[in-house]
Structures are given as structure tokens and as C-alpha cells.
Image (tube, rainbow, N blue to C red; front, side):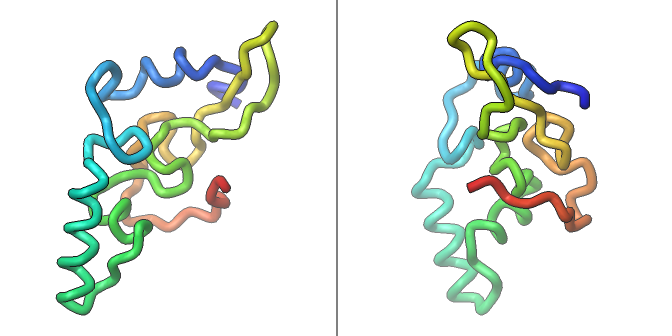
Length: 107
């Protein structure tokens, strides 16, 4: 599998927003922006869960927009190794934003 066994730093540096300040799980949204959006959607009678937020903003839900699966798949010395998210190819955004994937969500 492509990306298997890379360090967190190697995977994170490939993200389009690498080096920028970030908020919720690697996104550019602050926690307050997420709360405001969720309240607005709930008041409008639409889905307002965190998964709804991610999908509405083109963020990858299975990896929570990290671009990698947060459970280590191995070690290199004392560094944990991770693999890219299959759903988004390591970008943090879904390849097909409208397609539901059967990839289980990380804990």
C-alpha cells in the first residue's frame, strides 16, 4: 500500500496546509467556527453533527482530515510509522467528496 510506514512528519509535510496554523484535527477551522456552523445548521433543521461539518466542508471524515490513519502500523527505531488514509490519498480531503466510503472511522 502506498504510504505505509511513513513517519508522522513525512505524512504531515505533504498536506496542502503544511506549516500553517491549524484548528480542529488539522483543518483550518477553529473550534468556535465549528460550533457556530453546527448551531446554525441545527437552527435551520439540517444535520449538524461533526461528520456533517466535515462533509459539508470537503474534509475527509475517515481520517478526520489528518491525511493519515492515526494508529501506528509499525516502528522505525523509536519513531511510530503511520499509513496514508485510503479514502483521501493522504490529502485530508476526500477524492470523491459526495461518495460515501466503507472505510471505518478511526477511534
